[in-house]
Length: 72
Picture 1 (tube, rainbow, N blue to C red):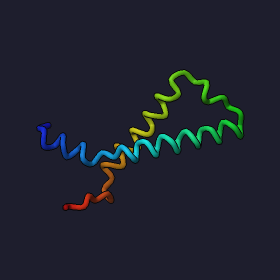
Picture 2: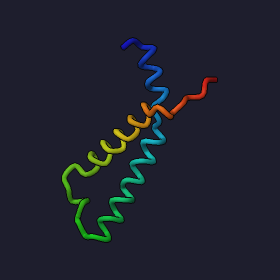
Picture 3: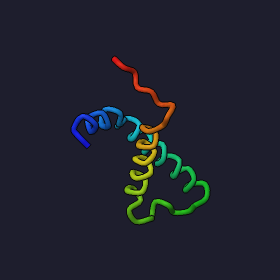
Picture 4: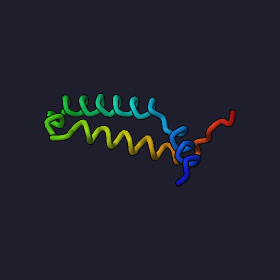
C-alpha cells in the first residue's frame, strides 16, 4: 500500500461517525441494562468492546457500495 492509497483511506474515515456510533451504543447499552438489569457495564474491558464495535461499523460504512464521495 503506497502513501497515496493510505491518504485516500484516511480521508474516507469519519471520526465523527466513530464518536457518534460509540455514544449511541453506550446509550443503547445503558437503556437495555436499565430495563433488564443485566449488569453489562460490569464486564471487564467494556469500553474497549464498545470502541471495537463502533470502529467496525465505521470501517464497514467506508466500504459500503452506496457510499459515494463527492469530488471537489
